[in-house]
Amino acid sequence: MATYFVSISGASREVTEGVSSLFAAIVLLSVGLWMHQKSTAGKWQAYLKEKLSAAMTRRSAWALFALAFIAVYREVFETVLFYSALAGDGNNGALLGGLLSGVAALTILAWLMLRTSARMPIGKFFSLSSILVAVLAVVLAGKGVAGLQEAGWLSASPIHWPRIEVLGIYPSAETTLAQAVILIIALVGFALNAQTARRSQAA
Image (cartoon, rainbow, N blue to C red; front, top):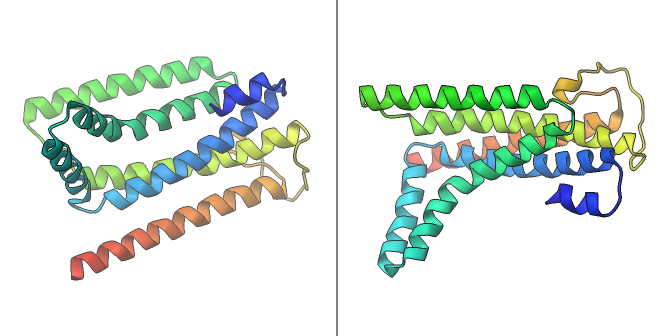
C-alpha cells in the first residue's frame, strides 16, 4: 500500500523503497510485540478459543471466516511487506531462492510432525519468531531512513560507524537513531510482556 501511494505520486525509487521499508518496520515491530505477548504458555490457544467461542455463539459462517483470517493475516501481511521492502534492492534471485527454501523446509517439518504425531511448542515458536521479526524491523528501519536520505528527503549526519548494508547499518546519525528507537521499543515491549506474564502466573 505504501509502495503504491508513493509510486503514483511520481516520487523516486529511493523514496518508494524508504517509505515501504519504514512502513514494513512499523508493522513488523507491532507483529513482533504481539507474537511475544502470545508466546506465554496457553495465551495463543486461549486467544483462539475465545474468538472461536464467540463465533460459535453467533453461529455465523462469516465469524468463523474472520477467525481463520485473523489467525493467519498477520503472518501473511508481514511476509508480503518484508519481501516488498527487499525486492527493490535487486535481490530477486536471492528472494526466490529463500522463498523456495522456506517452502521446502516447511514441507519437511509438516511431514515430520504428521509422521511422528509431534506437537509444535507454540510458546517457543512465537517467542523465537518475535525476536526474529524485531530484528528484521530494526534492519528495515535503517534501510528505510537510508533510502529517504538518498532521495534527499532526510539529512545525513556522518558518524564513525560501520557500514553493513545487509543489516541496515549505515554511518549516519539518523539511521542509527531510527534503529535504536525501534530496538528500544522492542526491548521495552518484550520486558513488559514478560512482567505481565509473571504477574498472571503468580495470580
